[in-house]
Length: 118
Image (cartoon, helix red, strand yellow):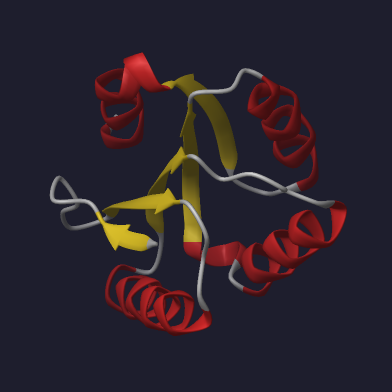
């Protein structure tokens, strides 16, 4: 499931990623993100990840492709997740991307929003 978070506003876009993902939701959210980028030029993105298992190298490559196609559309990306191994992945992605990317534990979601809004 992909769902836009209610706290999203203007240049800050939050997205809940939970459980299995389907193409219909993915396409809908992708279109909405693209619309925000068109409207604001650049956006700060919060990805709240819950109960997503089986994240593979192919999934990582797909994510990198999505973000590189829109590389000028992001100023910051906050990854909020319940598993600390995401921190290592974010460190790698941060080194490969032109935007700032940071990991936050799920208990620190407010700090993630504050970082995006700063």
